[in-house]
Image: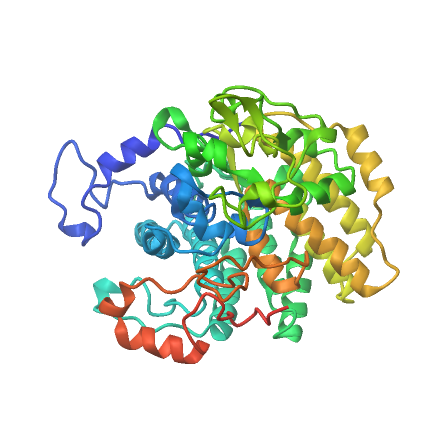
Length: 534
């Protein structure tokens, strides 16, 4: 059953106005609850929505990582030139705004979590406080994986007078976050308080524990190259604790358009220019066709002929796998050497006269990605099983074989794609696929490539573009050819991080400079600690 955010958030905004200060000093108002009366569970939907909003849409993921990691593609000309940031690594008019999106929303979300936890601790709500810790680690691990060193141990302490927090080195930060996560998981269930207003798991503490352990697994696998001993230790701890057991455990949040909490990526893909400009990449479509992947007709369509139909998100295209064509990354419509019409395999446009769509034969995302009520996937059973497959290949002590985890991950991915609410992959199709595409264990390299290409495809199709990019940075798969478009900001390399927001140079200059010195620079190709440039 869908767990919508609903009108409880509207009530939260009314009831919680002014709670940023000392709760004891809020004026008594018969129409407004003070800190003694207010139920901090009412903040939990906002906490969940803030995270979902940070990882989607124009905050950055669809404008940067979706095309850096070649899941999507765009000619990024005309009305949608803002996709030049992504497809060609070229500055657009709003790039500086996009750079700071995740940073600002990440700390805003974490501040709201802090407020929830302060009230929860005052009221002895042990379980809700532990859920807050899980959400805080989830949120700030997302931020650090994008930027590198960030404030954590001294962050969110403005009321204590810490206005210029130090940046924690990511190597130490990961250990701190994993310890905080473990403590939160161990604390869950020790309190008597009931978790209410929970739009992710409906207050199910057992599922929150599984989510915590699954997040621990994912974070541990980030470290396999730079700290293999800690990585193995935390992977095995997560497995022993109990990670996701089926697709029913997926951590996701359904959006709620009617009450103003729509899916931000769907909002973007309903913009007329985006409907036309955003296409699946050649890399993605070629992969799905090569594997005869049954998800292809669910996620891709070729629009009807002509520019008008191509710019209309309400018309249904042709989802026959045979006609799907992915757009190569790095092309434009400017009439010069990099014009898409000069690409050797250009399939031609569609339409006639004044109603011509030069990119009309390329596959676009289907209507499931334009559904403003679509779920936002935080972490899935499919990704967990695929990471366990790699852990098994590495010789970690996990139950089951790499091949078994790989099969479970692929079947989970086929199941969860149906949660978008559009087309579905049948059980027969999914089983036929895994039988025809068993994990290649002929060599470690072959297994690693197959597992991580599947992670890239699966997270990309879930519109979890940052996760697809992060896992590519970690594993080196798929092997991508960078775009080297004139005037790019990354020297013809795929960007490996977002640079720090310029505002940090004004508000926290010394800590920022220390972080830049520690990381060895503040460029789009500076690697974060766990990214060894694979």
